[in-house]
Image 1 (tube, rainbow, N blue to C red):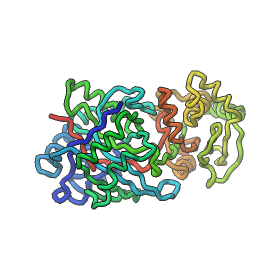
Image 2: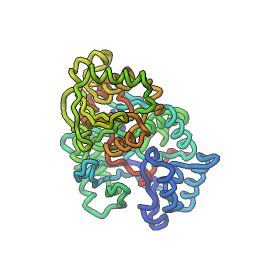
Image 3: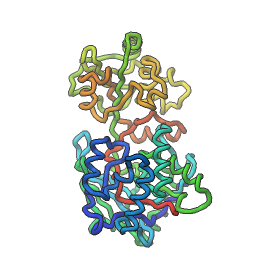
Image 4: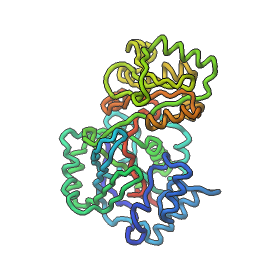
Length: 418
């Protein structure tokens, strides 16, 4: 079972560091060069200076800066362990307002397995090496892993909720207009009640697979027992009404004549195509065989593609579980990206003639400009399907889920010892 504990967090001393909104950032993997420059200009203490360092020896610079912040009292450590209640008030890509609730704690790092911690997506070696070098340098978790647990009665949040009636420790609105609110909960009884509720739960990693696997490697490198055996996590109940998943769409370029021919043949053989407007190209969530929005540079004509029969996917993915064979991202990857267009796992992992779009508008724009040749727009992956595939011991293709909103980096840090 997963071991969830309060932590003696490192965090900014707000009176000394400045306005919280000038200190935090989105996760490192969604920050481009322009966004990094803008964040860095907000404050010399913005977390991007450490979490996404640049320079001739970026990791050494990150380590020195993070150490200086602590020496100068800009970043301080709590004297006693605590759990931290967290609320995110947001409007998703669909425009609907919601509130997602969870809490921060530290979780003991262990191998993946049933009843403990499960992944749901494949990972790539590049990001893991980067995060490992940064962890070695700073000796801290700089950003949290986002994990899910089952709590149908909401008992864990119920144990922490009374503390959220008071003034939050910190409050900040991000660039997506999401309001983040954080409360420190050091009251032993509340912590004990939450831990009792969570006794025996299995955790499903929603976002942060690379960082979790980095934490496992780092823990084994150090060896023995200590703070390095734990990792910073934000935990949210699977049943939380504010938990939403949105799709990440797929794009392909460099399609030559032979590949166009293979793609057209696969679409004609396996799918029913219906013309739609650009406004209707993104399919809505719903049951049934794979359903896609599709557009390419040749005709610029948006279409809705529906798999003719689930048996086509079952035959193509016969070595996978029934849950995986009904996974839109898995079926698309096998039938069209790999078989028709000839992309390999390595191509997909390293974005060779392959890319992603967060929403329909971006996907359409990238085809309109000719940056990509074709776009495949997906339905959201239901949370229960994520859980079923993970329970089967299988990993989904990368970016099968887009849990929105993202967690902020810089609210809390988890020290890993000296």
